[in-house]
Image 1 (cartoon, rainbow, N blue to C red):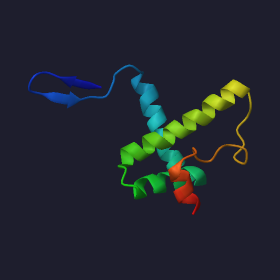
Image 2: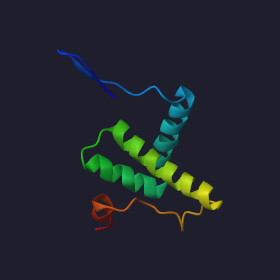
Image 3: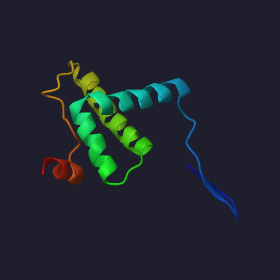
Length: 97
């Protein structure tokens, strides 16, 4: 979120969610990047592209939240074989090669 006046411009994080939820999601992504092989590969590829640790963890968490949302919509259980390991795009192609 950008706040600016005539002389200053500051980018700050939005405070629209629970601090506890934000903290839990961050650690979910951090631990997944350490122990889950698809998340670890995704994290390593992001770091290889120059993303900071925090940004890479947030992107891993976003992927996990997309999987969770799909599971809730379809009322299905998580199985690593059927879960989309990485979001489609140029990053996925770079990891596969």
